[in-house]
Image 1 (cartoon, helix red, strand yellow):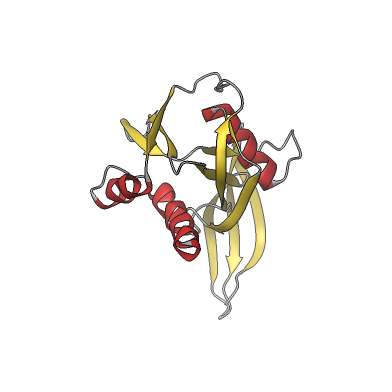
Image 2 (cartoon, one colour):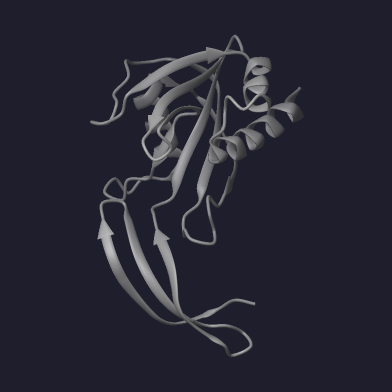
Length: 182
């Protein structure tokens, strides 16, 4: 079922993404002359939960949707840092929330849009999280911390307050893991 790439051309590259066009041969011999793919580094996100059961979320404006979204901390692996996905998740949590944890669990990964993008999202759960430093936002980040409990988190998913599909998928991985613990 896998397609054979006959030719691959980079069409545009900027910062953390590359747009390419692949010419592919399908298993039955047909040739797709132009299949467009967006290459991104893998992304990470992490759900911090404090010792007292508080869930740490963030709110931030997303320009493409024109809306403020309720999310979990996360971001892109930085190819210049040569970091593991765990290191990237911890870095993002510290930068965006100031929280850290000595109990970080890899709860799984998923593909944001496998029809068009080549990257994965790696999701982590940080238990016993506590404030270790001040926030250190990227140059154009404008983030607000939101603290709630697990019941409120689930309600935010159910009522559509959390409407970012990548967050919803990652939260399902986290909640599945937490329910096993309870």
